[in-house]
Every structure is written in C-alpha cells, then in structure tokens.
Image (cartoon, rainbow, N blue to C red; front, side, top):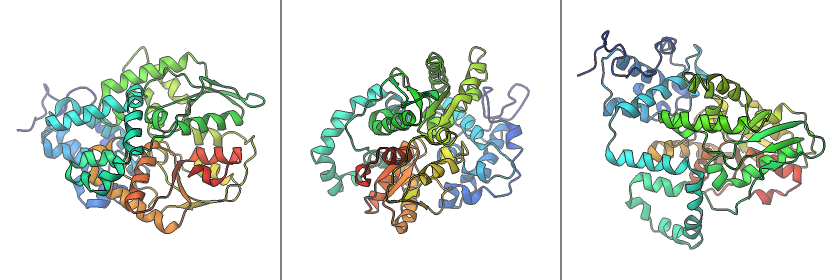
Length: 441
C-alpha cells in the first residue's frame, strides 16, 4: 500500500529529512524541452526515464500515491544526474537538487538487494579513499604489464562474468609513473595569487600527471600553489549517489583543511568534484557551525579553466599542431555553466585546431559511478559518443573530468579507435613547455 499523506505523515513515501522540494517541482510545466537533452530518454524514449517523468514520480511519492519500491527506484537509478535538463529548461527547474534529495531518500528508505548493496559499498569504500586506491596501483600494474589483461580480453573472458565486473575491467586506467605535486609550488616570477589545489581521489592516484600539469601551469601564470597532501575526498561521489551523511563529513573536513591555508581560491580540475564543492553552502545549510563557512568556501572554488580564463596570460604559448576534439563534461557545462572558458584556453595555443563533437550536451555515460552500476546504459552512451568523434579525424580528445577521460578511452577502444584522451590542462601545459604532440600520446 502507498503511504497516504496525513498530518502525521505529510511527506508521503518520503521521510521528513529534506524530501525533494515541492516548490522546485512546481516550476516544471511539462513542456518537454528537457526530453532531447536527457540521455536516457534519447536512448529509450520512455516518459518515466525523462526529467519531467521523474518529477512526476517524485510528486506521486510526496503525495503518498506510490511506494518507494523496486520499479519506482529503477527510474531514478537509471538517471545519470548529468543535469543537461537544467540547461535546456526554460522554467529554471533545479533538477540537480531534486535528484540528489530523492537519491538520499532512496538510500535511507529502500532496502537494496544484498549484492547491489555490497557492490555500491565496495565502490564508495574504495573510490573515496586515496590511500586504498594507491594500494591497487601495484597489482593493477602487474595485471596490465604481464599481459594477463590483454589475454583475458582477447579470450572473451569478461563476457562470461556479470556486466558490472566487465565494466570495471574496461574502465581500468593505465598505470603510469606517479608525479607528486609538492605541498607548495612557488610562482614563476612575480606572485599574483596564492591558490589551493584539490588533489582528488582517482585524479591523485591514476592521473597524477594532470595534477602536476595543473600546478605547473598555475605557477607559470604567477600563482603560488598550495596542495595539502592530507586532503581527503571532496564527497562528490557520495552526494551524487545519495550517501548524504558521508558527503557532509567529507565537506566539513575539506573546509577545515583549506581554511588553514589562507588561499584566495581553491582550484579544481575534476568537473564532478567542482560542481559539488560549489554547492557546499547548500549541502551544509542545516549546520550552524559550518553553514556560513561553507558558503564562503564555495565562493572560492574555481574550475581550472574558469580560473585561468580570468587571468591575463603571462607565459608564452608555443605552437602545438593538433586537431583536438573537445568533450564537455556534464558537470562542467551543465552544473557549473562552464563552456566557453576551456575552449578559449585551447584557442590560445598556436596551430591547435579545435573540433566540436556533435550532440555535445549529451553525457558520455561516465556520470560519477554510473558506468559501474548501470554498465549497459553507460556503454550505449559511450558508443554513441565514440561514433560522433570518429568522423572528426582528430589527433586526440580533450576533456575536463577524469571520469569522462576513462569512459571516452574505453568507448573509443571498444570501437577500435586508439585515440588518446587527455585533460585540457595537459594541452596548455605542453604548449607552455614546448613539448611535442607525441608527449601527450
């Protein structure tokens, strides 16, 4: 039976702690502008797997007309949380806040099957702990260098295993030598800014070259860079997946740590992390000890492309002859509204030709942990994106998020295209240092 609303239970199927907000839902006029922007609606054409359909399901639950059951939950699990619908919406519906509130309700009130629960817990306990991720480097290196990974793939071994396991293998990053970022990197020449650098979890462990490039470019542009080695996860994976308590804890720790550094800005080179850190003020709105501090901290958070676009270039950009297909990370273009800045940075590089990928607003299928918990839909979106990239005849692909980087690399390889995928800041770093294109391959 559904939970009917009553004075004793005014939130229907939801509990009293921040159910999805009715005033936000009421802004939706069901116009349908969100439909062609929604990846799952594009894939399946199902109304309940569109933003307006999911809002309708939220209202039904709030009114006590449906239960939080397996079928209802499946429509929210299938959502990527890419918030492309927010860019498309003419009514200003903040769908991001609705889906995050709904997912928090699901994690508190829906008993997931044991296997699903264990799988999700394993993901969170690994991917939010840099120290645990670091322990995986050596066995992963052995797995790749020994030829075992290639042999198992060639034999079709992973086709015999659950799709979630096969997805994990296809998304494994190639282990590269670690490039440590010093706790303090001095500005080159006159210092203009003192900034903090988020090291991240997956970024720090498997894309340390991106962090190193970020620190070098900031230093070349006159910034002193503070990168505290003790920093923890920012909580983005947790907040996007309904793990609210863990997200709050990570946010408090991040604020405490960076407040000690006395930096003017906190620079982030992972789109998903940046979108969450910019929302700390909202996330911690109920905490009297952190609410104001969180708002102040969020105002300091800047994506690397956003920050550099505000600075007059100081270092000389040397030519880099390359055709570069640029992929917009969803949490950069939709959640943070950053589209022009990374393009402007790339266009500063002489001889670089910037190529636009068709269907740029549509997600590549990465979306936090989505490609690990919804592997079939993620693969379909990745294949769609790879199909749009192939005709461009690019030399490489650039993007601003580690999850997108892994997803695109996996999708391109599945299509037989071994096109390198790099972070935008690595191109700028190569140009400033005068490195050849082969250094990025």
